Image (tube, rainbow, N blue to C red):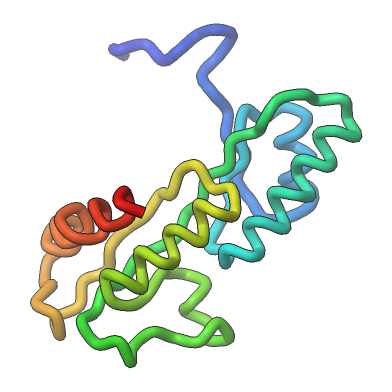
Amino acid sequence: MTPKPQQRPHPPILVGGNSTAALRRTVRVGDGWHGLMLLPEEMAAHRARLLQMAGDAGRTGDIPVSLLVGVQLTRDEGVYPTLDEPHRRQAMVGTVEQVVDQLVAYRDAGVAHVHTFVSTDATIGLTDPVDGMELFLREVWPAFLAR
């Protein structure tokens, strides 16, 4: 297989999961932690626990944090769900500006990388996943970078 992955000493290892055991594994053997569908305040709390555990174990240096969460863009501001709705954990939902606000909240919580997928929504003309990604790259990403 080419190109060969980084070998010094091995490809970076991200440990995924939201449990205490996953955080312990990250401290013990991981090069980073990958949270799954947590809200920004939950990411901040998990990151704080992770850094405390790392300090207690004598591990120095920052541990990069990433997150898997979907995106569902809409033109209707009223679609934005409340935090107690189950699908809110699985996706950042709302208008471009609302999704940008959510990305900023994740950044402020210490998330360095967001791994996402954009759901299609025929009500705003998104019938193909590529359309959703193009909208995300054309409108959401530049607005996020500007903040």
